Image (cartoon, rainbow, N blue to C red; front, top):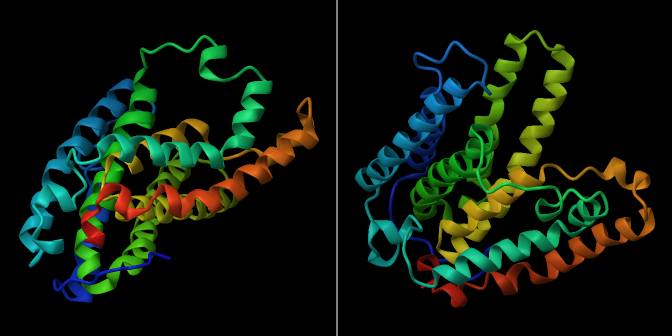
Length: 279
């Protein structure tokens, strides 16, 4: 999937996988150590989790630095974590445009329903739930599950291996939502089905996000794409027949997918960004 890959000397596979698993579990555990007594969407719960997730993002890079024996091509730690200014505008804009192309169908549905931000009285001042969903969660998850894990996995797994392993840990990390739903006395079967679907969806997104991270060598692209996908939500294919122009909307879904697959590599071409992983 990732061509022209370079493999670097570093941790053994067992140590790399174990370290990434430790990061994945630790990121979730910080939410449950002396957790808030309120539900997950309560102001105090969101504030506490945002503070803890952000704090953990300062620990993650230190953990990576201490474990890594050799960074890609001797680059500074912040560069292989994807936090730097080189070609940052392209790294922020092009992956977002690519993601928006994939969502042409859902965007068309929102336009017809007059639900796009500029059509529905969108306010630039977010509430705490929006801050969590569109800023803190995407930023911290991408930091831990992409920026911190990929440099640990690349030395022993290669670029392609890292692209597919990180998303599995990212998907598993969302299982804690099932615990919260079960504690809320939701139907067990519904929780299981929902969790399986969420695991599949988050894993697929994780593959895409890891691909963008490695190809661009930047964290900002995956973060913005993650935030955008959180805003858009899962495409509601079942609502296509209820739209004003169902055939046209269905065509837009297909066009979006075809354009996305054709533009995927050109818009993430490593030479555009001078990605540290392809030097």
